[in-house]
Length: 135
Length: 368
Image 1 (cartoon, one colour):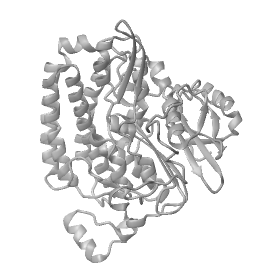
Image 2 (image 1 turned 180 degrees about the vertical axis):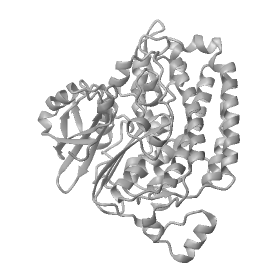
Image 3 (image 1 turned 120 degrees about the horizontal axis):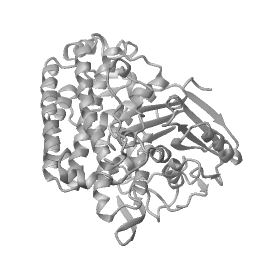
């Protein structure tokens, strides 16, 4: 419990589908965002799903965070698009920019970046190549 | 944006929007900038709607900074946001008209943005990317003759909305092109996570200004506009009504505008006395030195704001340094991409422009 309108649940990555199904059955009908944060020193990538409701006006006032941690070397998690189709594009974005693999996500190609792009820019060890006057 | 349609005759059996052509890596760049520098960064993706994106970011930041915003600043924030809403809907309406062949609607809507851009300039000094909303308040006080100019623009806009009905909204050609086209049912709209006018056109009364009122929206009398049909025409009607609601809101803001400071005391007293004199005379803020490297508390904050195209969501992770550790920005157009897949299934190839226009999709906003 973070505040009256923001609830937080941290789960093991293997249990995420099970927990998501329970949350969904309570009436939380959509995912607002899927965020991955890279923690280089702790060798982990944290995933946060921000979940809420459109159809239930009381639940709409609440944003629920579903959190889990993944191993940075092989960040893998089961996709939640079967439960919340609204997670599709944020998950694809996370795959593209952070390199987190979502099992069950039908499209594995990059969403924003070009196909031959190397690396995952949102990771903390990604080197930004500068151009122009800074180079 | 590239659109890929798989067809059977001219019936669409699969539709795939391919986005990313205007991706600018806002989230990555934000990790290298100070908190104040991020304001112009986050408002760039949504040019016609910059104030709402600016506001969402600042609201999340203020939670970490623990700063109280004076009432006058809350009203000034709402004022610019609602002006942006009218302006953004006009922009969308113009493009929409053009897409289904009404170049008059395009010309008219784009011309009628002008009074609101002029007002924005008078209030903030800039037409589009105003960077008006800063932690603790706003950058400028209300100019003296602003109210009379604003009221003139509102009266003009009300007249123009009637003209739009005659030439476009009630036009039999428009109705024939839009009614029953690209229908998204209420439950589907919620399930796929659409936002904003598109969601409300499917009968879901979700408006952040009502659900979780920010600024002073709880003091303002307005309706969250909904339609039941969920088709392209309903989305057009919702936007037209929202412009009327915004006019109503701006009138109330101008009437109720509280007196007092437009910038938080906590920061105002950090401005050196000589500069403070200048600030008081001109009504234009000079930032205190602390703004060059704001250090919010270590922690996380989220915010949601009803922007013109729908809910914009921010999530900031701060590690106590002058740069955010992670900034997450979910824009309404990004949430609405999925609607293309849904709305066009079973539709005809010729309906693509009508549905595209009705969703008011803005590629730079989606790609960030």
